[in-house]
Length: 374
Ligand code: SF4
Image (cartoon, rainbow, N blue to C red; front, side):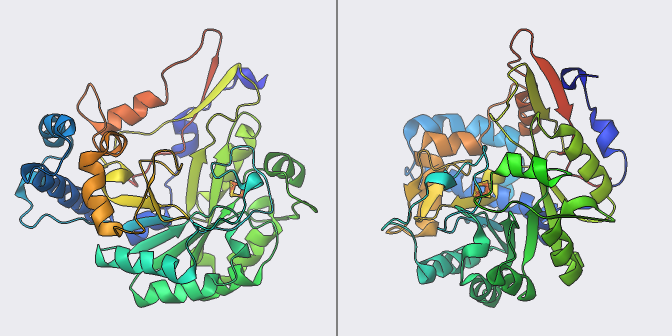
């Protein structure tokens, strides 16, 4: 059957019990929801104090009541971010087509945070209830020499570290970080080194694969997994080139490792196919209500990992930035107060995945984003 006729239903891939993501283990849903309510209550206070953009303030009340019921009961509103996504400035040894950080043109910049400044962002986040920092890199984090030190420093603030890595090459900093207690999400997108190489375009020698109980997988995934089995997970991204591989990988990993699956967006090689992920309604606040992203130059990013419309918190600090962003900047506001006809952000997420099909486009659904364990 041609790929364009394949429809993978959510039940085909989500029928067996799934392991939780690291973030879900480390930050339970009730903590995420409590943080979201506290942040929304804090926004309400900013608005009452006249510190908000009047246009956004006018939109706030009906949306907040619909999306975050219970925020009015928060006695002491305060900014809370249990999860900090932090990007560290470093280049990359691969050049994935879907890379959101432009790693292929990456250059060191004067504006990049240095090591003490990066650690200080975690300290500030810890003051706002941060439990987990997830390093998403501007590149391959195994190239960051001080990575193990970072994990130790974060631990001193009571913050656990999750690191995303392409694991193309074994790197002492990555091993050191793992040994220091970090959790890793390793890219595993294909069942062959050839397909993995074609999607990631390694500079120099490509991936080495090995076959074991996880099937054909990057050799370092096996190596790191043996080193710390409870702290190694997998990141599976997919587009029309690797859907079948992604489905096999997820099915095999489901009972073995935590799985984090995310779709590539806008990297379709075949314009006749649109791949979407489905997300069941779990009444979970969007991450912009309880987490935040700080870029490698110390900029707060609105609702995504992309720097567009980000603004610097170097002078103001993290708290001041978060105190003003969601009531003074429309892009931040819109990310937290997702507009939905149904009055539920879950419905909005779901419709995002199924709309805008061009005539003649084949929809392929890969249901990998169910996030609640029944
Ligand atoms: S490994 Fe990450 S940073 Fe490097 S090119 Fe791929 S997506 Fe970009």
